[in-house]
Amino acid sequence: MKKIFLLAFGFFAGFLQAQIKPEGLTAADLYAKIEQKNTPSFVVLWNPNCDIANDILARYQDIIQIYGSHIDIYTVAITNMDDLLCDMSQQIGLNYPLYYIGGDQTISLRVRKEQFEAEFLKLIHRNETEFSQLYIHSLDQVVYDNELEIDYTKLEALLPHSS
Image (cartoon, rainbow, N blue to C red):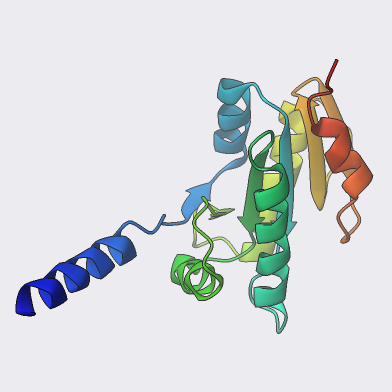
């Protein structure tokens, strides 16, 4: 009986350890990831420091489950607290890479967010200075959106079409 308990405990501890740690991203990092994978991508900036953050992350989890096998999904949190993202993903059972705005943490989060948006949009040759969501077919074919609600029609358009 002890062996079964120890085996179960070891498995559980290994499972917790295997959780994906959130990664800080700069605009150049995000651009490189998208360029390297060369697959359609959905990028969304979101605030995990609000009252409904778990609900928002659960909605992204649904999107990941539905579209994640065909689209790379980058949920980029506007926060300095990667442990908050770990806790939230653990609470809802999400095992998918999460990101947060990286860079120099001595600079205010608001300024880093503005820099991140402006730098990424400059890298993809867009004239806008901010965004909430990007629907990316390829780095030269990007649909920009500054709405807070996800446009499922735009997500569907990223899926490969059957012949």
